[in-house]
Length: 72
Image (cartoon, rainbow, N blue to C red):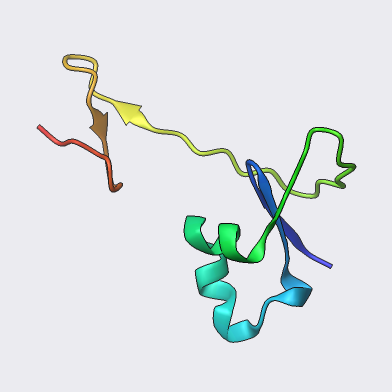
């Protein structure tokens, strides 16, 4: 059983159809197919993926792809 956890939601891929898997991996999809996770939940973690962002040191703007990114 594979589980995706996105900060506050957990999705079990055994309960998501193959055709919906791409959408389930997006933020709105995790909210639709996931269930809330609390700090008290016992999770077995096999892989952790941590996001990062580059910031322009001159103006503090985020650099790179993203909906809220600003490129100057």
